Image (cartoon, rainbow, N blue to C red; front, side):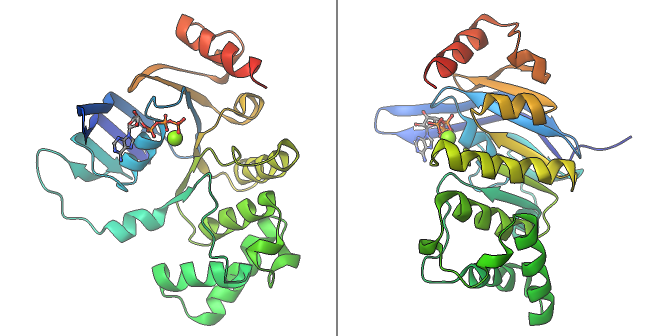
Length: 255
Ligand SMILES: Nc1ncnc2c1ncn2[C@@H]1O[C@H](COP(=O)(O)OP(=O)(O)OP(=O)(O)O)[C@@H](O)[C@H]1O
Ligand SMILES: [Mg+2]
């Protein structure tokens, strides 16, 4: 039987705030199978980013277990001896803000990431850089600086930088919400290509509903720190849940 790439059991995350304790996630159980594309939607503050960050251990969950590729990588009940770098290298993450180094060329942005994380020899690195820039259609921007690129192109460089690590799956946290609509399309196009041509496993937090309908196998709706509903992409056409229905009509009316 195929094992999940990521599995989360009984996850809870609380933050200490001035007002006391804030529950950002609770009762979270989720499995991401190889080859799946999972769209995570839900209103602001519902816990979407916190979920991604707990799954790749960018932040430490308060309770529960996280498994990566069949191995436990976090257990609140017993310390786990793992190589965090090895886990992170296999879980790429693309953020809303592209987080590129503005003083480095496209090539050197990717080069630095590869050198730091993988310590590959220079020839291997060059080959990978050419490869990933081709995937995101930016081969001609090898020597450009991020400031010379559009927002959509910068985000595609950020995606290329993640692809260069050859991760087993990629998390996207609102990758297009800082972009104008005309630039959003080109980034979504590249993401779609990762699925159709490269069979990447993706978890995408995004409110691009047409994209989710077309590309996702599964939709996860978060509400008030919990997964309120999980279903196929048809869920977005005929929402079987009142709160999901309300949420969808709200985001569709703001577009
Ligand atoms: N580092 C932190 N310290 C305290 N509270 C936090 C922290 N990070 C997140 N939170 C809180 O946890 C809750 C969930 O936040 P999260 O960023 O996961 O929401 P989200 O669904 O990604 O929202 P958005 O759509 O606005 O990005 C929110 O109430 C937020 O204020
Ligand atoms: Mg968020």
